[in-house]
Length: 308
Image (cartoon, rainbow, N blue to C red; front, side, top):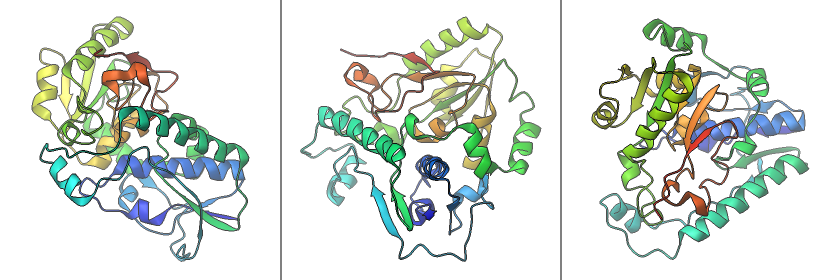
């Protein structure tokens, strides 16, 4: 039996590289491979090579061109046409026959189907699975992860050399995804999926009540002005590195204030102290359900921001 990583997904070169989606896919494949008792196979180089040592699973001499797709994830979102996509980036949202209720229902169904895939374990000779697999219940244990891949020692060393206090118990990683999140999926999430400043102010209060007042915040964001204004008067350092180093730094810190981005989420799976926005993308109406449905981690402290 051979289980392949989806080459097209891992090798995709979207405008923002899509590290988070690539990593969640890779992590799911590692988990499925562990349960099947096989070694996963990666046949291509990708942007993830800048973060991980993938040599143990990489076999570039192999080909997955004729390999069967054993499972294809059904998106929780209806596909927009090219015109709708283009206009949405300008803040113009044409009518789409979709709703928040339907998205929540599809996300729940997606999670259940994929949990069942892990439990029933498909039988095949050579295959791969298509999807992001962005649900906590689908992720591997830290032991399974380290069995198959490792974060490159060189990038870990670079992180600590530049930020010596990164792993200190009083250091808190903070991620804010803002710019594109103000328009992304706005036809479903009317308040946008970008988190409001209120989430971070409440997270600061919670951090300082749980961890103490003498904290140092490590800030990561695509909107540096916004995040530094939020943490004005606090002891912070603003990270302005490449994506690979940002992810490796986020991963190493013990404590984190998460955003609702898969980039941050995949780096937060094994934290000692974690804060998340209840509802994920659906932070504004989280009482209705989370999107993705498996967004919330069982060890996280949740900040509820329901607007209704």
